[in-house]
Image 1 (cartoon, rainbow, N blue to C red):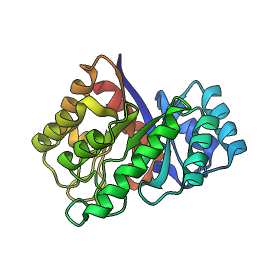
Image 2: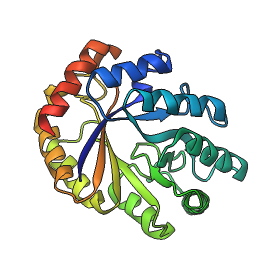
Image 3: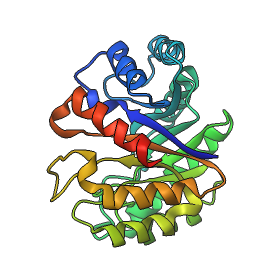
Amino acid sequence: MGVRTGLVSVTFRQLPVDQVVEVAAKSGLAAIEWGGDVHVPLGNLVNAKRVRNLTEVHGLQVAAYGSYLRAGNVDREEMRSAVATAEALGAPRIRVWAGNVGTAEAGVGDRMAVTRGLGELADMAAGAGIEIAMEFHRNTLTDEVDSTITLLLDVGAPNLKTYWQPPVDLDDAQCLQQLESLMPWLSTVHVFSWWPSNNRLPLAARESLWRPVLDRLAAEPREINALLEFVADDSTEQFSKDAADLHSWV
């Protein structure tokens, strides 16, 4: 089905919702992952519906509800609120975090709590036809591939998926190897250009990574999101250039 391009709204936390939508639409993107920290607060269903309407009026789709729920540290009330917010937003998936400790530091109890929490979230979301997708991120149990796959298999929920993004300072070949390993469960890739460490560069600076990543995503028979995040200087002008490059590579 190809690659669906979009924007992660936290890229422009400083902008109101209507401006975020305008930036995405003017850049020719197809979708927005709306963050739960500023733009779509957890449980505010009236706001979530308003954001959905604004998104759709501009010809865009909602890619996901980018929550900050941390599996293993979430009560059932918060889970229900996240599902209700995602439903109001028209989001097909909820992004969550796999706990708050990295794989190397996690004990058996940490992993059990995260696994149980992901299972509960996935079960609750399934009733609404919504996916749960784990952020691939340091200081969580999805900080490396083997741990991520273990979580996916241990939970065993058909609606539990994962994101991927290039870990800081990992070279292109290692990144592509990670992507390949996670491909059976992959729903979304966060696209940014940081090098070295967390220095933000124009997207074109890592063309050697992103061209083969996007080619690989395009080879899949299903639709996978490629969502731009965290541009250099938080600049809307740079974002437009990055979006143009993204489109030229898809």
